[in-house]
Image (cartoon, rainbow, N blue to C red):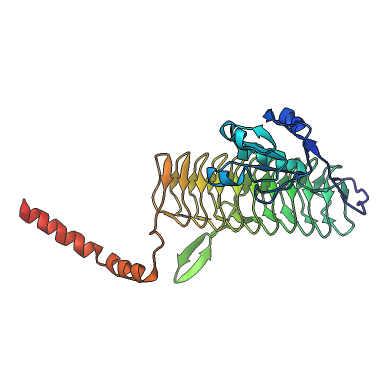
Amino acid sequence: MTAVIYPATLARVNTISYTASELAQRFGLELHGDGDTAVTGVATLAHAGPGQLSFLANPRYRSQLEGSQAGIVVLRAEDAAHAPHAALIARDPYTSYARISALFEKLPQRTAGIHPSAVIDPAAQVADNVHIGPFVSIGAGSVIEDGAVIGAGCVIGEDCVVGAGSELIARVTLVARVRLGKRVRIHPGAVLGAAGFGLAMEAGRWVNVPQLGGVRIGDDCEIGANTCIDRGALEDTVLDEDVRVDNLVQIAHNVQIGAHTAIAGSTGIAGSAKIGRYCLLGGAVGVVGHLEICDKVVVTGKSVVRNSITEPGEYSSGTPLTDNRTWRKNAARFKQLDTMARKLGAISKEKE
């Protein structure tokens, strides 16, 4: 490890502008209108000004297009004739907008350096060109690879790896045996590698089951604020590449999540569940342990997955929102379903 002087300031990206023709060429889009139209930021169709770019992806907002003041609008070919100013034609306007808007995201430029308040074990390995912020702690045997950013207050325990180009924004904790791939981004308050919830009952008292595994996070994953991913009991908890996890998600020990799956906030996944590739889990979904979800499954918000899912598709559970009076009546009837089913069965047999 080579100690370097921590920079006194963090340089920010200066405001820059892009013309419609520059954006079209850079992102492979078709240009309609004045290619010299320049923008310095992005906004919604309803609130954009002449110096801003917007997009139309949802037909619900088509009525806002003709009256929009946006200098450039990203949209589909069938909407181009209604654009009041310059337009960029995209097959998927929202994805193209996402790529363009990244040009205007003002992020601090983290120059390499180690803050004097950081505490780094002599047995840790830290590349020369990393950024380590104030009050960071790095334990023995851990490795921080090229271009990594370790923000203020992060704690990295023993035997962890932070892959090249990864960023721990602030107050992230890697407890033990956590392996981050390349370009992983973790938001504040997340905890990876805490002990899984393993318990055995003996003589009326709980006995903790040692959690001897670790956590492996693939390349290009993003993990939201205050999310917890527990280490495995024997083998590792695993997230494959490009998994996106929202805030306040609980992923228990030995869970496996396939590549390109996205999980919305407040979801809980119990131990040893296996989730496939390209799945989408809505907010506050519950997944029972030791089951499997195949590839390309969508589970809508607040659903509970109690059994394995073997066919791709969209799945929901629970009841739709109704007024409270109707809900109370239905809730009372839920308790009678078994009795009603038995009566119907008996009637069917009598008719036979």
